[in-house]
Length: 218
Image (cartoon, rainbow, N blue to C red; front, side):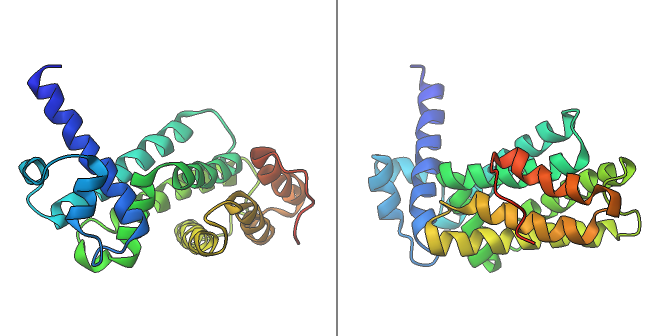
């Protein structure tokens, strides 16, 4: 392997190891020695790529954001109804949370330790709000969501609801039932913002996405 490729691979191995460590520990309590052990690299190798724990944690937040942006952009580019796009957006992030330590760590760092990264911790949430607003506008144009809603306010509420839902799920079941909790979340939101003629259709969307045949929770 060429030297430059080896350096890139080592750098990414350090980032992924940091994801494992920061996913289970707070920013303040996580130790670089744990990351070095997890990555199987030397202290010199870590400091060659990252000058501090702060720099490494910031890289995690940035990579987590990139993963979410890529997934969100793919959903917007697909020709699907706005309501379905909204639901798939939350389930896509849920899948990333369950399976990717970089996403787990990035979310933890940008919530629990946001004060350490004031210029970057907000970016993922601002992106999710903007993406949610795009799907909402599409759902309004399609006649599924009431045109009387304040789009930006509802988009923020969607992100706030998902954030709280995933945090509770992390505590109670390590995200094992996050999809079910998201379905219940959408039952409440769609019942509030849907057009009367679209209510049954909207309440079916989360189950079509999740593959859950359970009746609506409301």
